[in-house]
Length: 255
Image: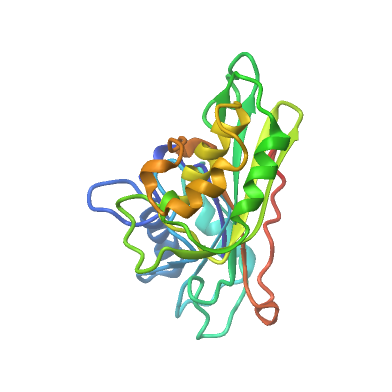
């Protein structure tokens, strides 16, 4: 299944005791349609407040339903801030997490003098004009495989800080500045810490090469401040082509 959600009211993707999560809410709805307990495996665990237009999950079921019934039926039991966008049958061995070969995130910044009432919950407002060219140029230092300890949360439980950024781009779209990052996988808070550092450069507080120096320090205390979760979106998860996993069919203001 492809899942879209507004993360504002959820304490992240993963089930947590006594806290509202996207995963728990989805599993309850799916179980009602399947008439038996459903557990889902996701492509990635998003943080509290993070949004998605491209989350992918898989589950096993004994129930036989057509695609429309799975989507429409489950959506009828979901709150308005979670929506199933597509569904397809996959091989029994498919695993949404382990078979993913890359993940793409976008971070949305509203770069305007005054805040927006409409986009307040879906972007970070920065009133100071950002130099997007400087931000993009600096971001290219992060391309490739590196030790990303400088952009890793102290709470990160990953066994290795090594990740490979396949693509990173910073561009302006009207009043929005968008940071787009594609990597094989991400460390805890990695994107939000990278964006915080890029903002230091966009505001001309730091030179472009500073980001290269931060990367090589391999220490979180040298990077910029972590930005808020509300501007972050999981937009796509890539899989080997033979699985024929659909892309997101949703068009939003960030695509």
